[in-house]
Image 1 (cartoon, rainbow, N blue to C red):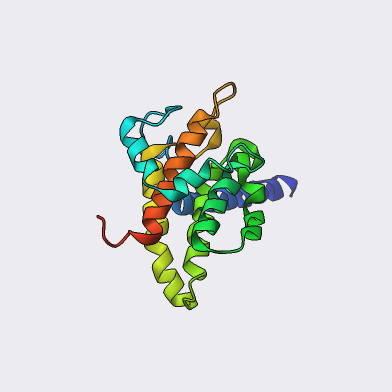
Image 2 (cartoon, rainbow, N blue to C red):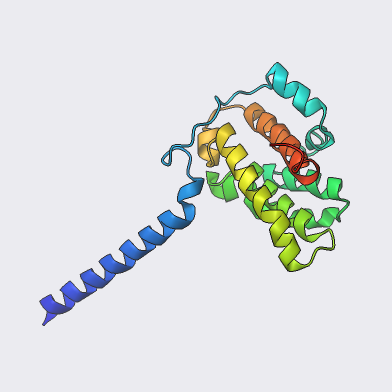
Length: 191
């Protein structure tokens, strides 16, 4: 009887784990970089001349420098520039406090998560009803994910391995802020 119970437990455990793996792969598969294969640019510590031109045109990218490394985490810095650009209360930056440093575990990059939160605040903070906010938000979320995957891995540990400079985070943060600015106000007019 114990052998039979052990087999049933093992079978149940296997089925649960298999179902979770299948669901997890379906939900998170599109957002993988290293394992999933999305190619991204080389991680640099400094802006290229072309990136510098792009960043210099963006008020949000310039504002990012006022927060990153100055008492605000990567996620808070990104969300803060979004809130300021949107004219929303800066106290909402607390929503990003647990997401810095890859959620405190070198996991999903705080620049990415702060940007996703910023898109959420932008969608809902303009007086749109829930359906209109969702319609506005979804293509921008998709575009931001696609842009991010072309620029960097998703995981903080892959972006900034131990002993590396925070320069690459500053660079990516400024570029992310410029991209968010484009998504907030100029999305429809560009491909």
